[in-house]
Image 1 (cartoon, rainbow, N blue to C red):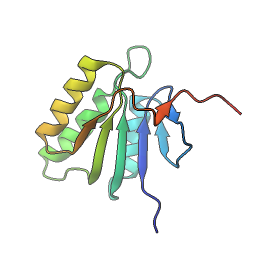
Image 2: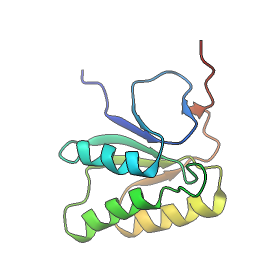
Image 3: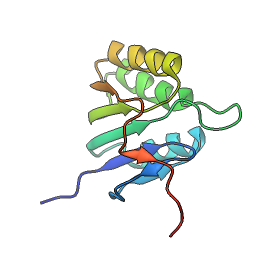
Length: 118
């Protein structure tokens, strides 16, 4: 059985269960991460809204929107929005659903949290 391809874009949090994932901590790294997986099915794409300082997820959302506009949307099983920013999460969900991306808003999902170094 193949390991699911999971991408996580979040400045601070990681998966609490240690599941394998490709992680980006900034929007710039998130855009690059999407680019590296452009031709693959992404089983789960986990997105946080606020990425530290003035950085937000919007450059990543724009990449997804432009791809869909061009008729080549990313092949994503589910976009999980786990942001603690309710207004940002709602706006992200609205933007991505407009382009038919499957979105689940999961603010406060225990799957992502602050992990302490062992």
